Length: 154
Image 1 (cartoon, rainbow, N blue to C red):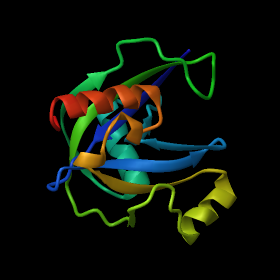
Image 2 (image 1 turned 120 degrees about the vertical axis):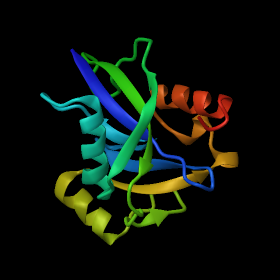
Image 3 (image 1 turned 90 degrees about the vertical axis):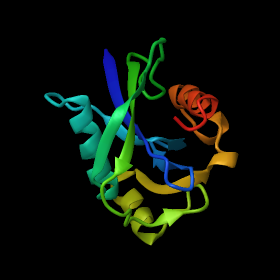
Image 4 (image 1 turned 180 degrees about the vertical axis):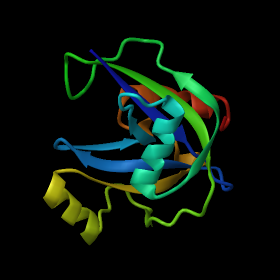
């Protein structure tokens, strides 16, 4: 079984990289923004939907950046293989969600979401100098973070 994930790489004018800090399925995870492809949906539509659902942020997809080219077993379901697709995106409106400066700094609203759903997330930018593969949790994200640094920010 395949699990297809679609993520956006958003780098602002100060060359900071947007990440999502999540508590999901009992684990703290820092990852690129995005999520799962739904049946009947294209990858670009998926990414636009995910940014709207998670951040109420319309984005423009600039270009494809990377698609997984190695086997990666799902961290949450050993019967699933993960296929991740990454695009470079830019916001079409100002970011209005609260941005944090510290990982997993959940506010009262986000903690309430956790109580209701067992999951929550928040967002932050990581400065270019501090960003590395160690900044993100998931194996494919780590690989993509290395490529971002090697290509000096896309």
